[in-house]
Amino acid sequence: MAAVRHFLDAIKFEHTVFALPFAYVAMVLAADGWPGWPVLIWVTLAMAGARTLAMSVNRLADRFIDAANPRTAKRHLPTGLLTPAQVTAAALLSAALLLLSAWMLNPLCLLLSPLAVLFLVGYSYTKRFTWLSHWILGFTDGIAAAGGWIAVRAAFDPPVYVLWLALTVWIAGFDLIYACQDVDFDRRHRLHSMPARFGIPAALTTARICHVLTIAAFALLGFQMGLGLLYWLGVLVVAGLLVYEHSLVSPGDLSRLDVAFFNVNGYIAVILFFSVLGGRLA
Image 1 (cartoon, rainbow, N blue to C red):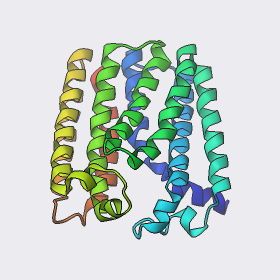
Image 2: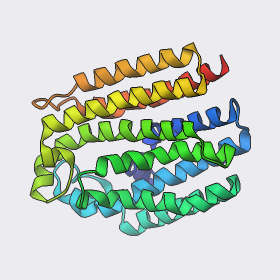
Image 3: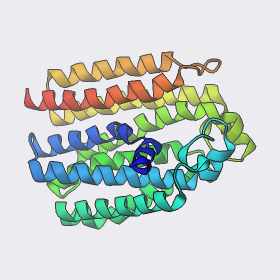
Image 4: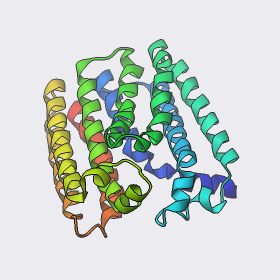
């Protein structure tokens, strides 16, 4: 049981809240209401498998980098609380759960699941060769929305691309903020990030632009889907939270970065879900 506890802590399982609500958002919109228990259950299992796979591979891929970075040196693999074999086994089981869930949903989900696995596994390595890794991470998390949509409709439709865009720029924006704390380390170890390449002020400005685009995409989605007043109120609250998030950090003060990264963005995901639910059903 200790190994399970350490593993869940290592992959920050509770942060599934960042992406899972958007799979539910896509399901509700695609179904124009309740998608049914089978779809809900299998999408939830697919999301749990996908995120666990991604984070397991991330911890494996970065274990030597983490050991060298004072900020991450106490993570579970560098300190020996978990072994690479244990995390590899978890990654394989998670991939199997994702593929099984896709098979249980519909043929298109199954057909596209290997492509999803490619992004879930591959994004962890992108910072080794490109500072665009923040947007690749966002695109990968956006697969949650695409998966939720096609789980219901077995097809792609214009609204899902807008939701996917919203997730891509939202995730990229707060990943840019998060990456600011490792600028010196990344430069010394030739790791690629936008803050390391262009500096913290440029990264924070780009993060703001990403989050303006996020709100614009959510607004477009509201018009496309004819969502009601509760949705628009939720979008306004999210816009306010993003403004607050950016007020917490500056080029000269990153001390409150954890609040910006974890707390605020968790609230945003949940608020958007309930806003869509209210806007669709009201």
